[in-house]
Amino acid sequence: MTKNTTSIPFTPYQKLVIFILAITQFTVILDFMVMSPMGDMLMKSLQLKPQQFGWAVSGYAFSAGISGLLTAGFADRFDRKKLLLFFYTGFIVGTFFCSFANSFILLIAARIITGLFGGVIGSIGMAIITDLFDIHHRGRVMGFVQMGLGASQVLGIPMSLYIANHWGWRMPFLMVASMAVIIFVLIAMRLKPVTKHLEVQQTKNPFAHLWSAVAKRDYRIAFLATAILSIGGFLMMPFSSAFSINNLHITQDQLVPLFMVSGVCSLLFMPLMGKYSDKIDKYKLFVAASAGMIVIVLFYTRLSVTPLWEVMIFNILMMMCIVSRMIPAGALTTGIPEIADRGAFMSVSSSLQQIAGGIAAACAGLIVVQPTHTSPLEHYPTLGFVMAGLSLISMLLVYRVNIVVKRKLAEKTL
Image (cartoon, rainbow, N blue to C red):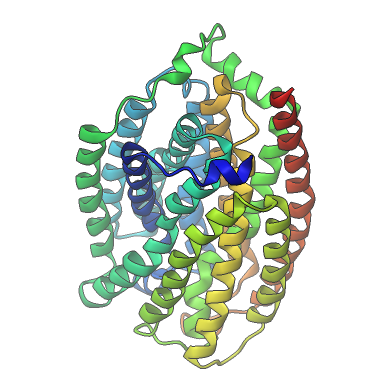
């Protein structure tokens, strides 16, 4: 059955929805991810210590998590298009504010504003995907939507680094905000209202609706799996550019081709992986990718001075493993919630993902030590060991998610 359904082509409108969600994700992901490659530049420009930069990254994540939890009870009571437009507006305003920050306090404040709105956008997009596409197509859909991650590395991050190197670190934020304004207009004009979930009448008040989602055992399994995956995924990210520059001796200009090459590979790899995740066992794919990532991370975090081409190979392999974990795990998770709970479930899941990421960034800032702004980062291999341990735990948790999804599918066929 799965093989037959995956061969059905998308309609023109479905393709438009996928495109809109992909470019929306592109701006949100780029706004978050650009902090990492510009980390060394920001730390030196604003005289930030590793701990302070870790908190600057965490500020976005924690505020996004809190916003998602507050929104979860209301997420299934409104047209998802209207919710997307509302939060995308706040994201645009917050991103503009980031470009004006001139101190540690103002930078954190700007990132908190951006996170309050931007952190919910991903969950709204996931709810739209779950409403408009059945589970046998979601791997392909997520493969295309998650291309925003690869595109942010292929186009966004190299362009942002080039702009930052020539006109300062503030300009990339202005670029993202300006791009988001254009996308906002496209969403408003072309995306149809998404209201199918409103046909299921909600008798609970918003807080009771939120609690009912959190109280369900199957949902809690998925939430825990998402949180552990996020902690592991965020640990190395905040200090990736600082590690490349100060430990591997990659120059600021070489960061552009480094991110571009790994981004091109992930961009090409994502649709392929999305297609295969709908054809083969999603959990087996996740386990294989997780095992590969553990091996690569343990080697990479122990590198010292390394030629650019070797660093590129490691980054390409890591990105492929990340994509091969993210797509099947995400597709499996969408099979957990019932239609009446999808908005709340996705909001809580996104919140936990963001909060877990904030915890990871803050912990990474406490683990990593840099005596001066030009000296090598110390204790970076420790992050690799922690990430490997969390990956092993995530394999067990995603296995439980896989069991729940298979049970639900079996119940629907009876």
